[in-house]
Length: 309
Image (cartoon, rainbow, N blue to C red; front, side, top):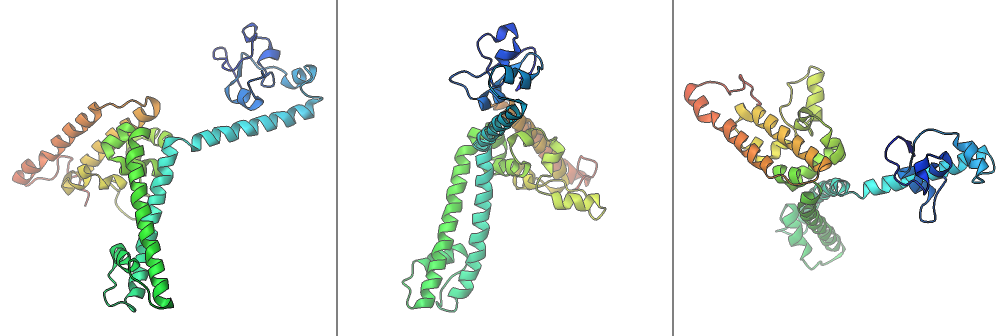
């Protein structure tokens, strides 16, 4: 429930006259609940709500008024949280974390299967592919049954990781079209995950986005135990990884700047703007064009010797 001079969304009939009794959160209609009124309603000015509630017969006394207010606000908060958790960016956050967990666990168990299967089968193989081969065997005896069963679960986990990746590929362009176009769906989802959501990512400066995923190195630098990281998870992007070390600082800053703009457009506007890709491509061509001249002159990168490695 807010108080303002403008928006009166959710006001009951007769709100225009400013009567506090008609704009109170407890003055609900047949198609509106107190929780909805708390979330979406407003009043032109503060009022003595407990007294109004008692006078209107909504509550027997002030104590009952506050009990009902607590119930309405808790219900409104729960509804807001449920709505937020179902948002597309939150689903991406959970999906990319689940994908990483599935891949990690599958790889760890694949090592165990490889070691165990090696004692039972001469050609057990290694890694997830080795587990797939073991899973297709017909076990003979209790030990082989357990190895084949474990290998089957590893293969299933790997398949689940692949399906989660496909889900991310399909959903990221919907939740964050510009970010997904510039970073790629999986990297976009990772950035959203590291930030804690699209809104949080959109509010971060580009310098913070640039080093997301490199927190350990950043804190080590702040403690005086290392150099400042030039990039975090965005290193996996071709425009950073594929740029020569001398220019990766410039490439990281250029990419982070455009990704920040893309995240803000996705959160606040939501429309796709292809010109961002063209601008980023042009900027990266300029940065990468330094390499031949720099090699010919024997000079450092055009950033004044800003090397990343």
